Amino acid sequence: MNGIVLISGNGSNLQSIIDHSAAIDLDIKAVISNHSSAYGLKRAEYANILTHTLNHKQFSSVEEFDQELSNIINQYNPEIIILAGFMRILSAKFTNQYSDKMLNIHPSLLPKFQGLNTHKRVLEAKESQHGVSIHFVTEQLDGGPIIAQVSVDVFDTDTTESLAKRVLLEEHKLFHKVIHWFTQGRLKLEKNHATLDGKVL
Ligand code: GRF
Image 1 (cartoon, rainbow, N blue to C red):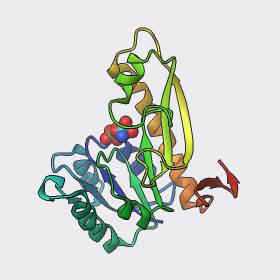
Image 2: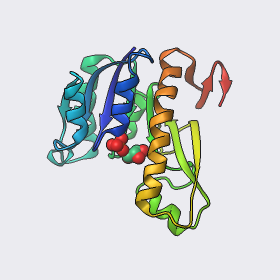
Image 3: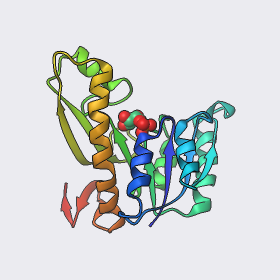
């Protein structure tokens, strides 16, 4: 299945997806970053995947940025769009165009801790559990139908860094599994619910 991956930074999730791409029948046609310095662009180049940089600062509105992003994405006619650490808020017009084929990974147990700095906020709130969620992208930020979640324990000794590391390991294990469900045609968005093999998740 043809896909596009959107990133903003290090791209360790992208790397895990690249490493599993043959096994999960994913052909990554291009990687798009909003930062030219994102290390994930290098990871894509090492894997011979085409890259694009689209600097959001060069656009006067979210809508204009999203329009150009769609223009790039649509050149490839992807069947799946994967947000792997893509740190921009997308407009409703954009998300609605791709709503049944766009997946995002978020480092929290949604609906808890939407938005940024989740690890720090989890520690401040003295939560005993934290984790990762993968969801279909809708116009609600981090609010689309949840597909899969994995929890990790939070320890008293945790720092933002140690917690982030533990969650990231789970992200790397979970994302390719979920993408595989999609490439197999088992995972769908139906009537605003995520379904796997026809059953609501
Ligand atoms: C991940 O924790 C992802 O869930 C979050 O940003 C981080 C990106 O990490 N949105 P990487 O770029 O995949 O290494």
